[in-house]
Length: 487
Image 1 (cartoon, rainbow, N blue to C red):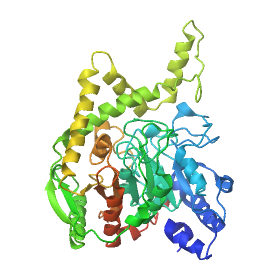
Image 2 (spheres, one colour; image 1 turned 90 degrees about the vertical axis):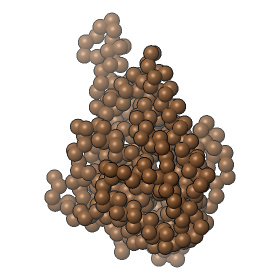
Image 3 (spheres, rainbow, N blue to C red; image 1 turned 180 degrees about the horizontal axis):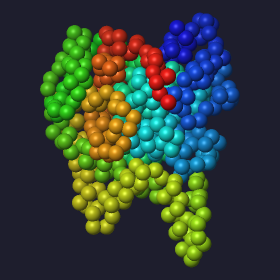
Image 4 (cartoon, helix red, strand yellow; image 1 turned 120 degrees about the vertical axis):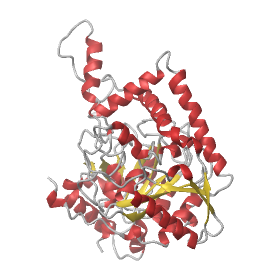
């Protein structure tokens, strides 16, 4: 097997035994990128020779090339959130997680494609064009961290970093057949993450298996005084939670998640997954999350309102794109604002800015944004209640497998419903992971979502690892046979 197809922990074992070297790993990853990224389009920017300057050497503890989503600041490297509005922006500092990765000797292979400002579920809303799913190049990889998930699935990176505001790590992980973890809100520093919705955003790992996710979370988790939302709690060694045993754990099955609208193949994969964990000793009970039906509406009020506020800073004055008005008038400054933002933002970004601005506007604030916050509290209370009875919750990650590129671009509501099973987790601030649990008849991956109470990532890893060790879904690899068929 090629080095770039191995997991991080397998490669680390080889390095420790001196059976491979950091240089061989870089060559394998960069060779793979050169071979297939013209088709997958996972990356928007490669670092190449700069890898070595990031601390990647024979003495580094984790010299394994990583892909970074293009909304995480890397000092002196263009970082744009795949939006024209940030063209040419080079952060003057590293995000906290970038500093942590560099300290661990993890080299950055490049920055990955994403929906503009993380606004999307398919990685089609990018100024660089869409990323393609390695399992079927005619399909989307999910979003908004689609580039990171596709890079891992296509073996163009050993592991990757994404961000998750409403499912943007877990849903693409499901679509691409990899592992995607959204930690508890506050567990990983958001300092240096270019904000979408500040009360929802969280950075997390995308990896080839659960063990790699534990190793990567060990590197990036922890309190950060630079982030006011970071929580000052001890960070355990998550690899110690990788135990193939779930005897005595009680898992809740929310009845609201298994209703009409779920793809029959996804539902069948869920039923099979439940049987696997039952055989491993887990106990199951039906539970209710009664406010689930309001989650999508609540999310698209809260998230767009925060997005409108966060994106107001992009006006062409201090950094990024700046367009001079075509005609110089007394209102030249306002013309510059309007022209810059009109050209700089894509269609979905404009849609969300307008929705959010409306929700925050005078006369509508109480009816929309404030009411959304109240319902968000009810949704969180639902999870709190279930966790008094259960150790975890099991659901599908997405209601369907990956859909075709262009299939939902003209139907925003259908696109928004792609995240129906993931957004409640962000509204509640709890941790969740997506792990591969099957394939459709067309050969597209299906993801299983496991949710636990806040800061209980250890139980999350225990359940995910046990499921993984008793199935073979994570061992399948995308063969990218459809290259020649895609122009």
